[in-house]
Length: 206
Ligand SMILES: *[C@@H]1O[C@H](CO)[C@@H](O)[C@H](O)[C@H]1NC(C)=O
Ligand SMILES: *[C@@H]1O[C@H](CO)[C@@H](O)[C@H](O)[C@H]1NC(C)=O
Ligand SMILES: [Zn+2]
Image (cartoon, protein in one colour):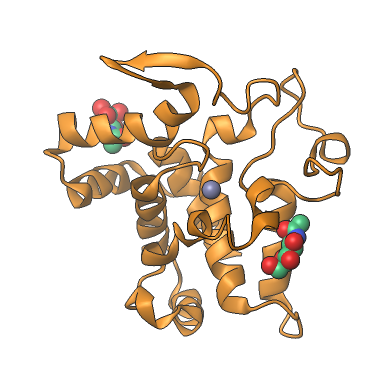
C-alpha cells in the first residue's frame, strides 16, 4: 500500500482544498494525487498506469475528482466521502460508520477498506479502475478535517462564516477557500508552484 502511504503523507502536508459538501475541491484532490504520484515506486506507478482510464492521459491526478462527479450516478457513494461522529470527537467505527439507512461500512473509512481490499484481490468483482479512482479520492477526503466532523452540523456545512468578504460555510472554507486563497496570495495563482512548495517541505520518514 505504498500508494496509501504517499497519499497520506502528502495530504497531511497539503492540508487545504475544495467544493462544499464534496471534500477537497477539484484543486485539492488534484494536488494531493499529483504529489502522491511522485512518491510511487516504479512498480506501483506501472500498476497505477495500467488501471488508469484513457482520459486520464497517464496521470492519476486527473482522475482524483472523478468520485465527486459520480454522486448522482452512484447514489450509494455519497456517504462514502466522510465519517462524522455524533457530538464527540472520538470516531467509533461500529457506531459511526454507516449511511442514513443504517447500512454498515458506508462511510469513508469503510470505503477505503473496501477499495484497498478490492485492489489487492485480483478476483474482486469490482471494476479495478473505479476502485483506484475511488481510493485515491477518499484518501484525500479523509484528510480534510471536516470530512471527519460532527453529524449535527453536517461536517461544518451548516456553519455559516465569512471568508474575507464572502459568505460561505466552514466546510467549504476547508474544501476550497483556504486552498484558493493560499494559491493566489503565495503562489501567484499557479498550481504547480504551490505543489512544488508543498513537495519541498515533505520530509522522508513521517
Ligand atoms: C464497495 O465497492 C462496491 C463497488 O464500487 C460498492 O458497491 C460498495 O457499496 C462499496 N462498499 C463500501 C463500504 O465502500
Ligand atoms: C514550508 O516550510 C517553511 C518552514 O517551516 C514554512 O515557512 C512554509 O510555509 C512551508 N511551506 C508549505 C507550502 O508548507
Ligand atoms: Zn469527496
